Image (tube, rainbow, N blue to C red; front, top):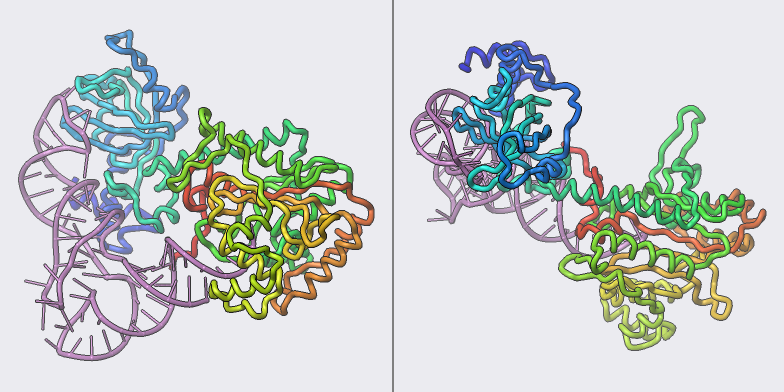
Length: 512
RNA sequence: GAUCGCGUAGCUCAGUCGGUAGAGCAACGGACUUUUAAUCCGGUGGUCCUGGGUUCGAGUCCCAGCGCGAUCACCA
C-alpha cells in the first residue's frame, strides 16, 4: 500500500488517537495498522474483530494431541486461538507462533494447503499481537517443532498497538505495571502467578469450608474504621451527607457475628490502609480473618499451620518446600514456636524486662527516641531491629507483650504478656492471632487508653465503637481470632519478591 | 514523608572530555514453500521526562518539579 492509501485511511478515522491530529511517528505506525485493518475489510471481506468460535482448545492440549509418526488422516486436527508472538514471512509459506495462557505453538500457513479463500492472506497480513484462530492437523516439521499445519486461519482481533521488543520483551517496571495487560501476554510468568493466586485463594476457601467455617461479607464502608491501628481512607456519602471510612479491618463486625451465634466465620476481602507503598505493602490488600468461638490463639495456630502446609503441598507436592529469594522455606516440617521474650534474649543477650539495658541497646542501635519512648514500645523497637529479619523459616512468635497488643486478653499468670502470636516467614509478618477479649469493661478501658495515647492527628482516626461495646455486653463467647495477609501468602507460595507481582493491578500514581 | 539511583526512537539499550542523535528488534517497501529471535535488499523513525540556569554551544554540568526503582519511616 502506498502513501495515498495511508492518508485515505487517516481521513476515515475518528478515533481519539486520530493520526491526522498528530502527524508524529507513533501515529504513523498506528496509521499503518489501521490501513491493514481496512485492507482486511475491503479486499478480503473479513471482519477484523471476529466472532464466536466453538470448539477451541487450549494450546497446551493441542500440543499434547501430537501423535509421533502419524501421517495424513491419522493426525489430530485441532482448533486453537492465540496471540501472534512471532511472524516469519517466507513468501508462499507463513510461519507464526501463537500464544495463549497455556503455552505457545507454531503455525505454518502454506498457500497451497490452506483450504479457505482468505486464510492464507490473513496469515500473511498478521501483525505481532494479533489474535488469530487456526485450524489444522498437528504435525512436526523436519526440525522437530510441533506445528499446526493450517487448513484455515481467521482473525479474531486486530491489534493497533506496537508490541514490545520480541526477544527481551517488556522490561521497564513502570510500564509493566501500568500496562499490565501487555505484561501479561509478553511475560508468561505474570499470568502464571495470577492464576496461581486464584487457585490458592480457592484452596483457602475449601479448606475453611471443610472445617465448618462460614464465609461472610461485612461492611467496607464504615462510619468509623476500627479493628486495627491504621489510618483509613476517607470518603463521603452524598445522599445522607455522611463522612465514611473504608475499612482497615473487618474484625469488629466478625466479632458481632460471634455474638449473634455464628460460631465459625471467616472473611476473605480487601482492607484499605492510608499508608506507604513498598514491596510488601499495597494500599488495598487482601486479608483473611477467622473467628472461632470456644477456640483460642492455639486453635488458630493449628489452623494456620495446617492451611499453609496444605497450600505449600499443592505448589510443591513432593516436599512442601518452596524457594523464596534464593532460600528454601520448609512448610512441611512443624513450624518453630518460640516466645517473643526468648527471641529478644537470644538476639540481645539480656532479658527484655531489663529496661535499662534495653534503653542502652536502643541508643547503641542509633534510635533517636531511645531516651523518651515508653519501655515496652522501646522493647518492641529493639526487637524489630534485632530479631525480625532473622526469622526466615516459618516461625510462630508466641506471647507478645500486652502493652503492644491493645485488643488482646492478658495472660492470667502474667498480665505483662498476652495470648497472641505473630507468624513470621522470611522476615515478613504474615499475620497474627489472639485469644480474643470478651470482657466489655476491659475492652472499654483499652479503647479509652488508645484514645488517650493518641496525638492530635491520630485522634481523628482512632475509634471508640460504642455499638461494639454493646455487642460485648450482650455477650461474646470466648474465641480465637486470626488475620493473615493473603497477598503475602501468595508471594511466598509463588516466589514473588514484590507484592505488586501477585496483585493484578497494583496501585500506581496516575500518569502525568 | 526522608535518602540514594534511574528517565534517550513503539520496545530493549549505547551515547567518551560539553561540540551535527546511535544500534538491535518492531514498523514500512521488495524477494523467498520447512522457518526457529528466519535470512537478504531498500528506505524510515527523536518533546533525549518537564521547566529554569551556566555556556559560543547541554542528552551530557547546576537547580527545581514529575514519574519509577531501592533503602528507611509508618504499617500488615
